[in-house]
Length: 317
Ligand SMILES: Cc1ncc(COP(=O)(O)O)c(C=O)c1O
Image (cartoon, rainbow, N blue to C red):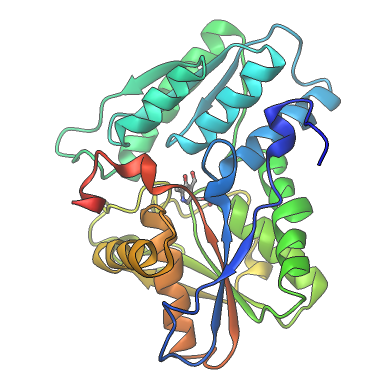
């Protein structure tokens, strides 16, 4: 392996591991792509690179311009890293409800971190759609104030493209085309949509399932019974996600906080995979599929980020 020109070149090409200890007793296989092995310890490094490089190539980002984005921490860490290497100033706007490790890591990478208070009554560790609206308002204000480039992960096609061009095709190659189903906990929907589009382009019979918090499953058209869940990085109860296309969705799965937490702990203890809440949610949903419609088949999941990002939370208590 030749030396890389920068850390940006080390993003992607993450390994796939079969979770055979965890699925013991179940019929079927779960293949997990270890996205926490990216240099910023999450899958979001991929979209950070794609957003900045697409914008540079298309002339939407000028040299010396400030980059701003609303983030639950992972996209911000990726952007902080990419901006540090490329010499852009980066401002991350994040809810105080997200774990503090993320803010510290972004600051260490040279980002300016703007923390936004949660709504009265919201709980730390539980970022709701309402909390996110406050973060969105502050992000728009900073973008305007600084004539900045908004690395808009909820809207920019680069988010989709990062997974359509790389994550999905890597997964197909690494699994020798054995995948029959894919399920993914949705935030922006970029990972789900990009991977689902790549999987379906390869084999239209691969079934793709959106994963949501059980009490805020709005994409499945269920009523929101509690918007304050613990699965950080998604499940914002936003009905209209610009990157999520109906033709890629074959079904919806719901996971409770407790299921996500227990599965994240099981992943650590039984597979030695130290990941966060949403990775636990993905694997819990995959187990549901193996117990039902996809019994005996192979289900693909992403392990979204590192458990290190949650040391201040009760995930490892
Ligand atoms: C830990 C974690 N899990 C899941 C997601 C959701 O991914 P996506 O935005 O691609 O739907 C995110 C997004 O920020 C995340 O940080």
